[in-house]
Image (cartoon, rainbow, N blue to C red; front, side, top):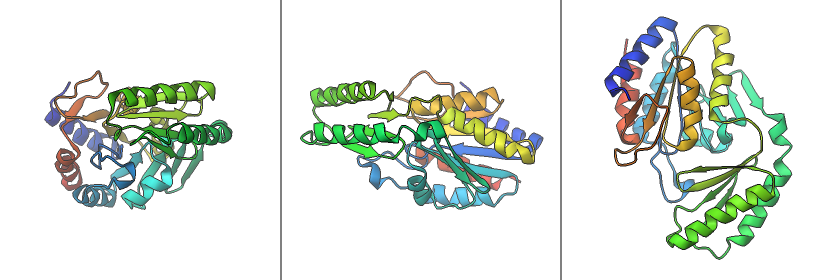
Length: 262
């Protein structure tokens, strides 16, 4: 893994060489600290100000690539010049772009039925939360304190996904059910790169914190860009990221540097 300063140097040189930077970031755990209740997550004010300054630059494009629904994450970031990929990229919007995956849209009835069954099954499990995001379903167990109950929630969510013919993925204290379509954050980042390169070359960077961000890390790595993992030193795991930052709070100075560089 690279030292952070070397990663920053590569980003600076990449923006200079290609003329534009695409800075794509996850939301939860990256721009916003992880909180017990997903609905309480908020972007760090200093990160919001830095993103606004980055979007002011004619040589920088900002994209938010999140597991949240696109309208949810757009409302939390509030930067109209940014591009947004919600629901792990099943919904992509931004200036001049609106993209949906038709094959995924056809699975909304199965997702809705799975949500209803899971809510009924977990009605008595304290702390379990079922989040219906329209095109995906998130089963949160961050606030489930009983280890046995945690495992029951995980197993039941996996069984429901398999029963419904949905794709099951795991993240930080979460099980997600998605349409059985070959699409993820990495495909979303590739889509954005290809669409935005129509106006000229760009240098891609992705910053994220979760296992679901690994596809995006791999996507920018394949384009000779830079991937940065936001994770505390005590949380090592295999990663395709080039460098690491400890926390969302520690990410802010990097965003400010990228916004201020001549």
